[in-house]
Length: 527
Image (tube, rainbow, N blue to C red; front, side, top):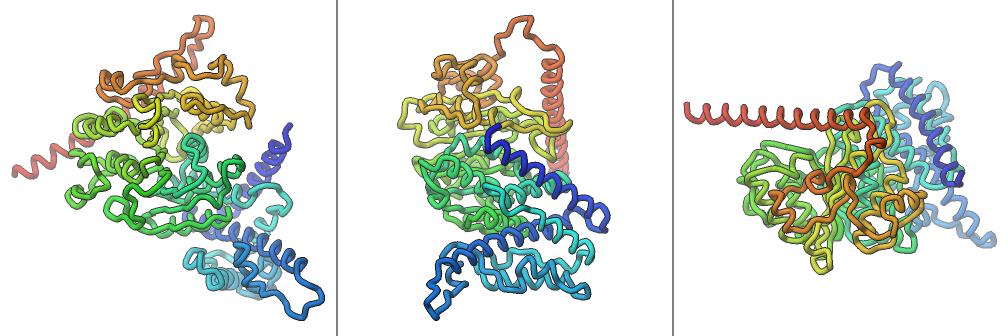
């Protein structure tokens, strides 16, 4: 077993134990998941900040001249090292060792306020509602967070924070889906757009997972850059989610310019043609956006969709925010790939612009809150000057996944690397083998050069896409795997067909509801 695999196994065990203890505590309290999640994440943040401060304090002390009468300014030295300065009464052990009669809730709240006062970059970010937690619950949470070991290699705190975020997303249902994108999908987006350096935008940034995985990608490819080479810009509508995002960035030693705004109507980062990379998981099929208010906005260069659906507003936002050499990767509802009428016309213009690079179909059950599948879209404006200017790579990844639980799937590291390597071969780049995907890749691409593989991938020309009614549905191009009768697995195929039927039924139901609403509006207008 590799050293990294052992490390990941240890960390997984730690995450499971921490979550199990914290969740049991919540079950025995009077709090809902939504009331409990932010304070718990705040304590993970505090433990991280305390660990980093302790390390910096020891380093500064060891570097100081023992013969000098002048003591180093700890606050300034911490700022110079990018470490948060913690006053004494904000230290983790100080809170853990408070006398029994102390108001622990007030003490933790005061500690958070003091940390914000000393560190302007996290002003108004940390939770300050610890008085709402019962004293015994809060003390036990502090003891649980103390169990995060200090000697684990890698980004342990960030991974624990991310693990808790994902579990809270599952337990909070629909609201959870608003702030957390499954890590598997984020990693695949990052692997394909390769954000080594430059400005990164997420105009629906949630808890900041796209930024965190971008930095992780760079750390895994250090010869190509370092995390300091990227500048992070985000937009998020919900204040509470912005706090989650800024804490998430902080526990990963990142900083970003995160603005509160509604991306349909506001443009706080002056996004037009500005960004090297755009990544997002926007809300699907949003209605009631005031199109009249934005019809002349240059961020929507291909016009307003006539239907009451914001999917093609988001798609245009991502496109128009890119510089002339920029790349975008985003999650999109399956229905957008085949949408008709005015949405088809917008899609045709985007395809004809030459910016559409890769489209990937994803299986159902990757999201915690909805079972429907989705599609990943990738733009690359720089490919218009390459030999790929007239083509789009379609990948059907619906049969690639690891079943984590009955209702949840994800990609394994090997599967992620394999899918990203298909794109690398298409672009004429060397494949990677950090996760032992070489044999799997060779089984599909024996010469380690890109070829169309029935049932998996197909490069289509814009002329071919036009003959398919400008559809961006990979299933229309990739076809069916050529397999012998002996290889045919009836149960697997039946399950796939059943999933596809469920998708079609759900989309049909959505269309029925939309038609009913439109008919009702027409009847109201005629009365």
